[in-house]
Amino acid sequence: MRLRSLVHLASLNLRSDLRGTAVNTAAACVGAAALVFFVALGMGVGQAARLMFPGDARLVEVVPGAVSLGAALGGGALDDGAVARLRELPGVDGAWRRLALRVPIAASRAPEGVRMNWPTGFTVQVPVVGVDAGLVSSDLAPGGKFDDPPAGEAIPVLASRRLLEVYNKTIAPAWNLRRLPPGLDLMGLQIPVQVGFSIIPLKTEDRVYDARLALAGLSDRVPLYSLAVPVETVRRLHKEYGKADTGYSSVILEARRPDDVPGIAAAVRRMGFAVDEGERAIAERVGLAITVTAGALALLALLMTALAALAIAQSLSASVRARTRDIAILQSLGATAGDVRALVLAEAALVGLAGGVLGVGIAWLAARGVDAAALGLLPDFPFRPTTFFLFPAWIFALGTGVSAAAALLGALAPAALAARVDPARAIS
Image (cartoon, rainbow, N blue to C red; front, side, top):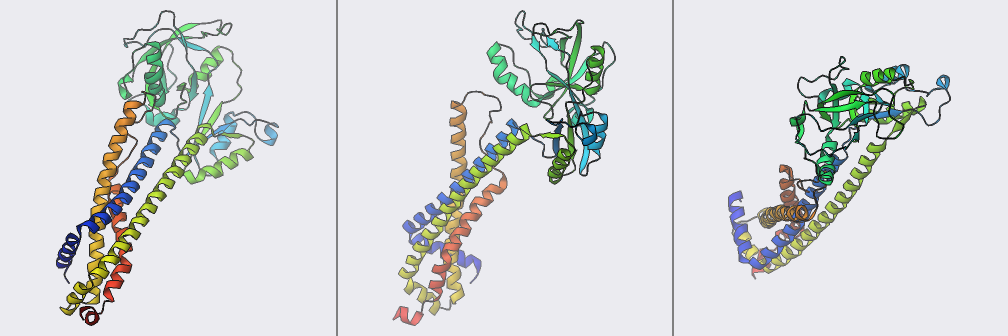
């Protein structure tokens, strides 16, 4: 039997039992809708979590060990020698120094060129950390430089991408300040600061002078509440203010592959240093929780799809028994057992496809409704997603395909039953 004839005959059979067809289509629709809805929700929430807790799977942050037995036994300060040894570890593609600035820097005026109602007498302490240019070179604005500048020139800084979001959503509304524009519109922004001044009593240095910080880029590799400057600038300021050299605050190792990270972390600990897994651990825990929850919901949806397959199996079995004479007449007209089996499977496939298409559409509409309700009720907090769902193209094929496959699976037994009909006995 040709495919076109098979589909036409299956359509006629389905139209002859509209009530049963509607019930089977609804069962397939519910399973497909639940599966697409929960999978899209899991991916959307996962993307929102990654925006809140961005993590590079190839980075390992090395910090001095909690207990040091001296350089002879390993560990000790993170000096240039330690950085060189860390760079030679198997699987390491780069080692980038990070040094916290111990000279206070404060800002008491608004950034140059930005109109904002800066409160009178308001001073902000600016946390600063020095980093190697190689760690953040890909995040610099086009043509930007990240070197220790000559005397009198602005110091290039990078800010965390998340810091801008936190400022616009929490600090600016609370202090009645103007929100800053996103992204590269800020590049080149200069912030007047006082080097050596601290808002903490008795912490201001004997020497205080004016300087400028120039925003050179935004990076996820910069700590959330700090500005990153060239590590050479921090070392110069420490020397100018007589700060003792106690080694680097941390060293960021970049692995060649994410699979190399566990081995690198183990080697670092054997050297007597520690691995700071603060944000990485948070990101991993959040990601694991989302994955487990989304997996459980998807499993529930698959269970609903399996129940839909059972419902279709029962309905088609009853339909085959009710159409025994019709099937016998088809066989007497030349239809083979394979043709009869294919006819029942074609009916199930049409029901599954129709239910899958409807289910995917219902899931998409339900997601849009949930987004509208949630975004209307939730306050404008940092990293609030514009949608809690992701609908890549393959997810539509997934919903439709799983629904059709479940319907075909449920139709296997009824199709075998139909193929075993004895024409002579059924007609007599």
